[in-house]
Amino acid sequence: MSGDAALTGQPVPTDRGDSVLRDLVAEQFRDHGAEYKLRAQLCTGTDEMPVEDASGEWAEAKSPHQSVARLVLPAQAAYSDARRIYGDDVLSFSPWRGLVAHRPLGSIMRIRRTAYEQSSRFRHAMNQAARVEPHDISELPD
Image 1 (tube, helix red, strand yellow):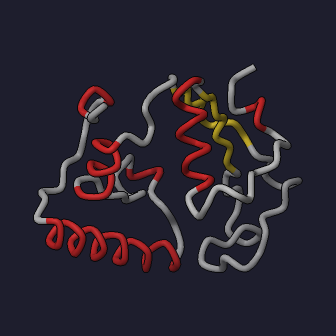
Image 2: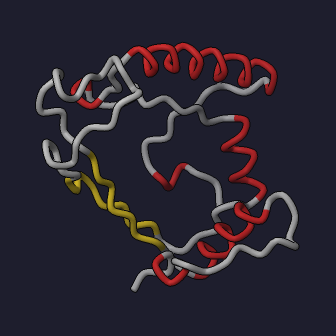
């Protein structure tokens, strides 16, 4: 069993401050790796599964969730000072950095695209840091 599965159902301590979840994740990864299965529903028809109206659920019967990827993460120093600074000052997030066929759909995601880009520009300007796009995990600090 992967280390993350062993945590299922465990209570979160309430006496460890505001960063308890971050600290628990860092502790978990310090000693254990984790494995995650990513699942998605495929749009089988925009009449029953509209991408412009995010208010409705897509029926599981029409499109059951399918496994699309498996992430295997080794034990690591997940929240070292160097990684925190790198994540806060250097990296940026955008779900549009990928295959065109996998890019987000819908009006909400189009609005988010602008927000992600503006947030990244502002943060990098304020931090006086160039935006870096790592190509391999070896490029991340320990």
